[in-house]
Image 1: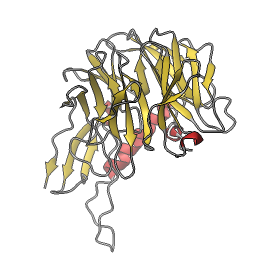
Image 2 (image 1 turned 120 degrees about the horizontal axis):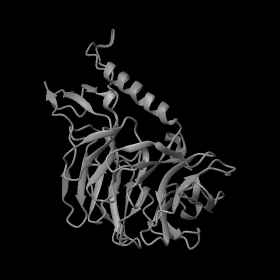
Image 3 (image 1 turned 120 degrees about the vertical axis):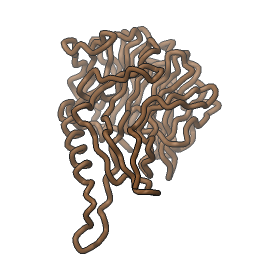
Image 4 (image 1 turned 90 degrees about the vertical axis):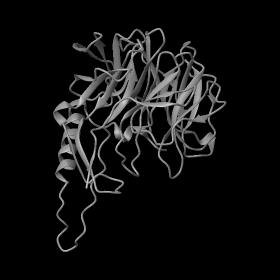
Length: 351
């Protein structure tokens, strides 16, 4: 079975250190000298994602996201990938931007994995070093004196608040004899941890997210019952009962999230030979629509619903080529399909 946790092995500050080291390596590789004796330039590593893990605040006015600012980028004419680029690692971290694209600024000098605001907008929950944390948001920045570690055992990811803010659901391999992750819930202070979905003989159960009415948890399953190695979207009651499968596409489906009104579920899906895309379906699995064609970044939660349920902010990305708009944030109108770019890379230069 495929395990999403393979990319979640770094501690909080160590993860940031690695990002900085990678940026240094990437920017140091922009050597135009040919390989000795070969006359062929070595391939340049694909630039890391620039804007990722967007999360819309419940007030609807601001979007938080992780960001590694790109200082400049250069292409040879007709090339799919840049041959030179430079980052600003001292400015990397968690940023805010108004939903109209104004007032973009950094509020935290570290990236935050799998962030989600509390329903009242006063806290953010996230994972770091395979543990779940929460931290208070003042309305303008984070109060780091309120940082609380909510889990201490196992490997824990993808936290999601209940609509009343009293519970957090997440996935963990705690007490899992085969190392697979399954779904747990706990009170928002970290107490009363209970595993609610556990089928070690069938496959992992991951990526949980609460329905707005508090009655269901949408999630993904890798199950032998599906006769596929792909992950599928399912829903269940908050105690783990009454499981219902919603997707039957045999693709890699990740990160299902209810719209704020509960009528729709968005998720990322990747078929064979193509980049992940953003899809939206009705809450019962009907009327599935592909909303993007340019690709989305799916190594972390790539999108977030607006509080109105009419819009989704997402990170546009593809690794098979690197256009100038790669890694930027866009806002999608779910009803019309129209898209508007929210963040921008610097204007590239060409030969």
